[in-house]
Amino acid sequence: MTEPIHQYSTPDPIREFNTELALPDPDARQALWEDGVVCLRKAHDPGWLSLVEEGIEQALSGGSEDVDIVEKAKDTGRFSYSRQAWQQVDAFRRAIFDSRSPDLAFALLDADSMNLFYDFLLIKEAGTANATTPWHQDHAYYPLHGVGVVNCWTALDPIPMETALRFWAGSHREACLYQAANFAGDSDYRHVRSDRPIIPDIDSDASARILAAELEPGDMLVWDSYTFHSAPGNTLDRRRAAFSINWASDAIRFHDVPCLASYRAPELTEGSVMTCDKFPLVRTRAQAAGESSY
Image (tube, rainbow, N blue to C red; front, side, top):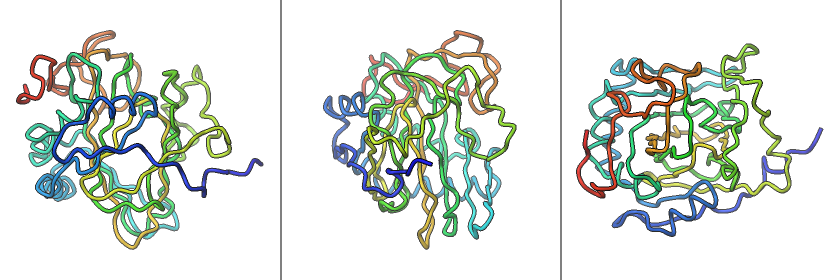
């Protein structure tokens, strides 16, 4: 068996840009294009973080219809996540639309317009060391054609290197889709696509350049949906939480294949643009940094 050389090694740093007072510049957009991931420091302020915390309380107390809780064997804590909660949780809706969130994403997309795809809440409580996230591409799970989806993942807690996400630099460049990783560990996994290549053994590939970054609350990682990434379980004595917003450019079209209900809408057909009530148009080039159209 090949030794997993990356599993315990020190990764290279993700290129970072301070966005406390300004939107991402062309250098940040170039870094995202080259590496498939970029770090935006101080993307969100304490007020935004408090709003998201309000949304978490609403979502986990029954406000969201799509909350999943995973309890791994040998773990004492829970791994909770939720998709598309903005439609039921007002605090999440405000954190997405009534903030600088769309402008941060649109500044990094080479697009004439941008739609909200979905929001994603992720909480690994203390005692979830076995709740690891395997290497995967987000796009492998999507019913989408095209290139131009970004995940804007904001830390809600301090994230040291021991629990930081890992990224395979440049793995998005060929826009090649691999099979979807099986998060649940089931043998009969509905997202496996036999027509796609299997995920390579990234941890044992000496040529793979792995990137990571320690984060403070409000720092944001932005990555391309084709970029391979993974994450360890939570070995800290506190929770590790993040709130991500996924955006789709006007280059994206719906692909009518089996997928999670969160990623489809009944009015979308093969080849259609994404705009609908579930995936609203939020920015256009003409609007630039103007108000949300939602």
